[in-house]
Length: 249
Image 1: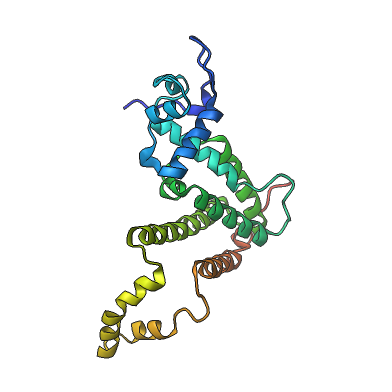
Image 2: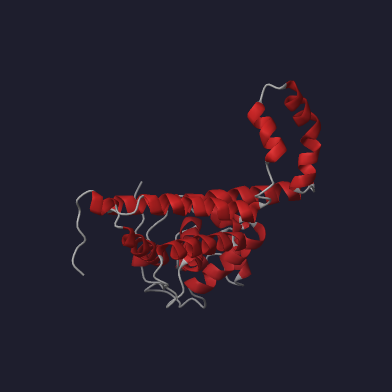
């Protein structure tokens, strides 16, 4: 299969033919609006053209199909992960905490992003800006480049994984009409039978103690994030310890 040229190496508008009456930005915003409201399954090139009040083949003036449309969408949402200009505080822990919170908020605004955001994605302007920002923050920890990349992946996995759990619970609530607490009450008869048998002491302890200090998704999110930052802090100085030196500024 012939590989496609990177989307951002191509001019936005075709060299020949009539000048389209909308651009990539308008097309991307319309596609994101569809996916936000109805999910990625509702998004098609024909649906996009209809929402743009354009001919069914118009989007193909810019992109080859839905895969490239999704690349545009992911890049646009990635811009919401970025630190605002002039907002750097110089403290790596605060910077990474704020990054994780921005990512979580953006994925709640765009739930489809949590579904596809960890797939292999083409290099794109905002993804490169994100790498530049995050690696710039991690560089203060004196880590090797491989360690910094792995640490960045750890942050992304924490955010995406946690948001996927949150969104799955929201979907379960829509499907069943039950909030988590009401759904758990339905499980109590079986849970009590397991606990009373005495074969699973840790499970019994969980049912007795869980929820005392961390009572919801927000509190569990913050607790997990802080433990991840603790782990990152524990690895600081790895490059110096391994005998590497920082390049001159």
